[in-house]
Image (cartoon, rainbow, N blue to C red):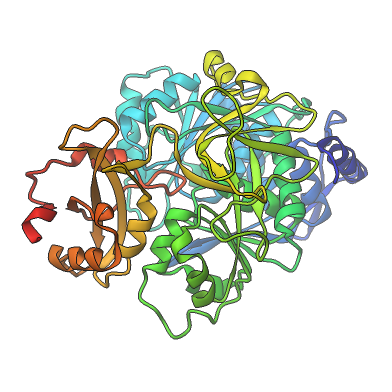
Length: 568
């Protein structure tokens, strides 16, 4: 298997292309003024090379539902990327400066990421669904000098900016479907991108492994931490696509995950751009249209997270469920209870994997290893083990914390501005995942729960996804999130179980029918103590259920809360 250094040298083949690069537009050839300091591994360098080699190749389609698609070629990524480089420079953004981007999946994300790499600046992509106080924290913590956002989030951005007068609005993108009034005081990205071409930067940034992004964690248990993403990480995404996913030029990749999350970047966007494999990216994830989108564009593989899979499976069965072009679903966290029936119903194979932005990587190709496992680390590349609190390794079947490291390399985690947390994450020379797992006799790993989490009731350990898999089969249920609250008994570490349920649009939830289903299909201790009926289940950028929000809103006497005791 090739190392990261091997890939850096392999990209030298592109250097000759850069030295005589041309980009075609409107029937004319325009010679680029490429810097001799362009080096292998730099994301901007790579896109410039691709634009020179195949300027008219359609690499990415942004699917916008009822609104027209936005189609990108390598050529217009660079052409528009140069326009936003000029904009950033005009706003005082240069090498080492940080700027923030708040929007759903739009082409501007790619333009500004290219621009950041070209300038040596750092982009902070922020999931626009976060609350204003969290955005305020990220803007301040990252030291952002400017912000770009789409018009639909105008009001959500204005609030935090009132207390941060030094942060400049670099530009606003106005998108179809959101009739947001144009604010004249802010630069209009629509006009800038429709305007005249900009020259290439005088000098491209020449650091081989610069910080390109800061991606903040979900922060479900406290303030989020910013993970510094360096340029070499993009090459590892490319490497994963070739070795693990085995993406090929015949594939068409798809994602509806937010590009602000590492999954969408690592499995779809970056492999697409590096390997010239077309990708389709939806403005946002939609479980009801997923298979129709894949059929329309011929998508052969897509990426999702376990919580999303449950939602997809809860959709009413259709006669054409198995009639789709998808061959492999790349999934992180497939619920064991629906794994095989999901594959059969939709005629797909599941390639399970485990990873985090901080590091740690394992996978289970289709047909290899036991159902429910996220597999093993790649042999010769990394190692994993499960340990007790004292650091000793657990026995097969015994739950402990998952730790990992790359063979021959000291683990390094960069949390922006948080040296203490960075060092704690790699204490003892291993990457501490915070995930509680176990392994079997054959060395396959299984996820159990997040450290400090998990549900225990009357001494039994309850798997929330097992309860969710039962409730989501109810015809009136659209989505469900199961979580725990402190047990009324007061027993230390014990929980009462809450099932938060979002109904199918236009339907009402009958609590009694939910409880009857649970009684028939669950052990007594796993039956929820309470049902909490909500309009929708709040999600993170990684489509994980935000049970912390639901927990904050929960009170036993609320009008939308129903107690088991009233129905038994």
